[in-house]
Amino acid sequence: MPIDLTDQPIWLNLGLFLAGAGAVWYAGLRLAIHADAIAERKQLARAVVGAMILAGATSLPEIATTCTASAIGNAPMAVNNLLGGIAMQTAILAVVDLVVVRGAMTYFSPKPVLMLAGVLLVVQIAVCLMAIAAGEIASFAGTGVWPIVLAVAYYFMLRFVHGYEGRPGWKPVDIPDEVYEREQSRKADGTSPASRSDRALYLIFGAYSLVVLIGGTLVSTTADALSKQTHLSGGFVGATFVAIATSLPEVSATMGAARLGAYTLAISNIFGSNALMIALVLPADLIYRGGPIMDAVDDSAVFTGAIGILVTALYLWGLVERRDRTVLGMGIDSTLVLVAYFLGVVMLYQIS
Image 1 (spheres, rainbow, N blue to C red):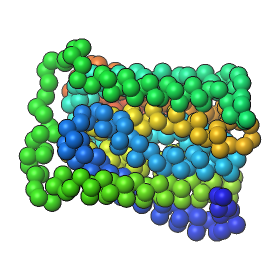
Image 2 (tube, rainbow, N blue to C red; image 1 turned 90 degrees about the vertical axis):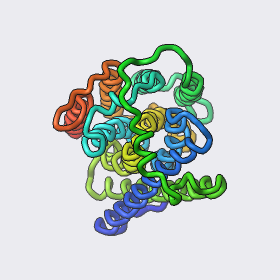
Image 3 (cartoon, helix red, strand yellow; image 1 turned 135 degrees about the vertical axis):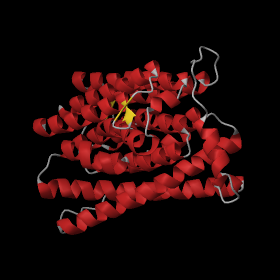
């Protein structure tokens, strides 16, 4: 049973919220390093590792917060946390571009599989918005059909991405120097995670994943209490504060991957995490006992999802164009993503 913290002082809930967010941040950073080591050890494509393994681990807070919010009957927070997280996590790429890359990240990621993942993500978000606008068409034991459709779409998305990697469809020209190889040769030493045994590597990865899960649960519980204590709507809190806090693993993991020069891993982690969040509508609906969850979501979820489509499309534009042009040290696509995200948050506050 979820713990009710609404009777606790605001300062205590805020402190617990920050503590959970801090744990999530640190563990996410370590997850990126170990996911990269797993990819190198098993000779797996980094786009696949980012979209599946790393995305799954860094999305544990979203799983925890969404399931907790559903269990306590806060459907707007559950769904808005997912859709708001998509926009927030895509904006993370812009922050990493500014702070770490200092250039157009999409120029250094000439991987067609990233564009495929981005297009499939847009399709998933669009179907989710159709579900919210249309309402549930049928339900069984309180669970709707739309969440099942979204989960099936996610499954096929993973299959397509995994099958596409390495396919000789087309290749970009004017490929920049392989940043990842330069960074690895410069940082290679006996203390890296790659020097550990397979068993130790997996155990450590699992341990950090558990820290992310526990921290995410703490964040969602305290956020719900803070929402009630501050009289802010659950939809707004879910799409902003909770989405930001639960996106900390993606922030730290993406920064860690970028520092390694593994830009493909960084982008695929974000796209993969965003795709997984759409699929999480199904467990949210299974746990929510107030009927089909799609019928309990407010209009702000549609606006939040539209922001997710917009910022994803801006990065798809950058991946297709591949121009190494910058504004304030980051790619033009990253600049537009940040502007779109912050304007969207302001407008979301106005309509919530």
